[in-house]
Image 1 (cartoon, helix red, strand yellow):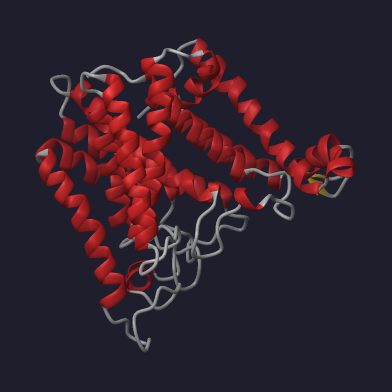
Image 2 (image 1 turned 135 degrees about the vertical axis):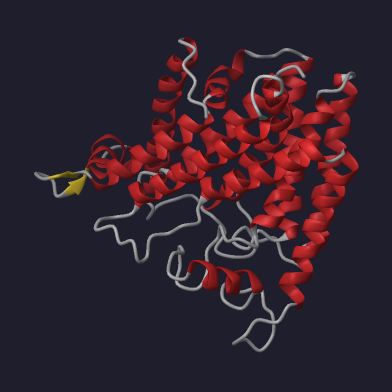
Length: 365
């Protein structure tokens, strides 16, 4: 399998977008598309996590193919998943304001879910046929829909797509107890990881499809498949709403469809027409996704908690006020100033990761 530059750029766009929506100058002033939907529905911010899983799925067959004959694929997968899970816990510890309490320390999280999905998708791609993988993805989506809408929840009159009265949150309360993001539920819970596996499997199908001969024809086919998935998801939304917090099946299908459209566009521009000048910063993000994610989020947490004693404000707040709010905020509004800070933060990491890419320094596991 050859390396797809479009996949690196797609992953890089996703990491850059993640940093953008995760680090506004102030959470009190954020443009609506850059905030997560409160419950049902979606925004641009809600596309980031499923795009990460889609990109991971698309890369899995390439990554595992390189490992065959060098070392045990099974050992590599388990080792990588364990490190990802541990890094997720470490990032949670960094993000948690002191004092850190082990009694309420959150166990689920973004990297933790990626680790679980990675194990499942690696096993399926190594041990089963494409037809079996398609069946697994459809079973995951339909089975999750049935479980969330039909399985009764003790203490609730009937199953409901609320934070508390669904079988997923019931399972999480019994497995994790107080170790969740919220008292009664967690957005990265166990049962909702099942449709997330389907999200990554759709990425596997897209990556394999684009790696076949006939690039121009493959791009158009992926566009058609993405558009069809979006339309089916919008129809499904009427009975099983698009909801990131619950990772509903309609959400998994919708975001996979949008991801397929974006990946197809990248493939057409880069791998078919070879228009590459615009993509260089995103290649740097895409070749070092773990470094971009972990270091940017961790640094933001440190800046948020590091207090400038003379100003009685965090270091992040000080930079935001002096460099953006005091000037841009007056002429264009606090939302514009907050977005400008986020863009500047993305630019800083583009420079850092660009230099790492130039020196061929890649942090992988």
